[in-house]
Image 1 (tube, helix red, strand yellow):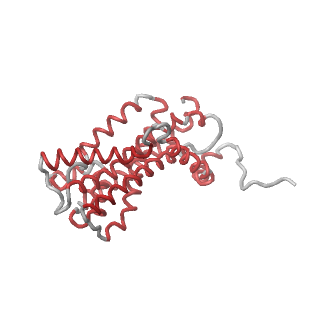
Image 2: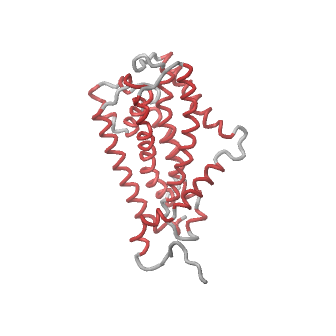
Image 3: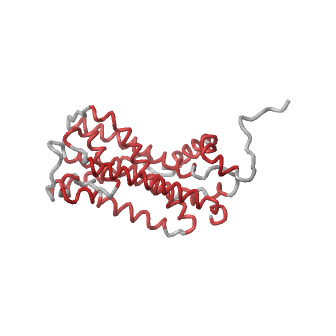
Length: 278
């Protein structure tokens, strides 16, 4: 007797357009396969492996603490140790920058899959973001160690941290979808993204508190969507000493939502040409 599959993929005119979002769920196993593969090859053939996820943010924290905290003598938030202030911001920034870099190059890296079989192409950049989350989880262990060292006890705000983790991933996924679609046609973007990420590190409140920005400029400064995300992380991890600038956070949230919608829209519009261009 002929066995029945869970579902049949029927190629008919307009099928993919009508069932695209449903197919994202149907192909969830492919999502997990790609995510696990990316994790497996992340530090393959490296000498120290996953320790890179620890060394890079730790050394960045040391440099920023010395430059901004010791030499520039910028203030911390309340009595928070400056190293904790910096590392609480490095966590979301590293999560954002890694996810953006991985997703923006994902289609080029997986070009061998594009022309072989139908599946929602959005699965590829979405799966690449998981690798950045694993790096974030490893780096979070350093934060726990630092909080033990400084005898710093978080408040109940820490319970809301998962919301800001999702927000940081969302902030990277929107631009990542648009850039990876453009990268298929214009390969220049693979050189632009590292520069943008590096530049963004210095204009975001990573090495300093956003509270040092004058009040009249804070709303304008919040046009950088990572400002609201970083302030949210500090509020969750450091407690009441690190306040959230509510108007700026609402603006950051609106910009992240806008970029996500725009990224999905542009990705879907260009998706039909991927197999021909890649």
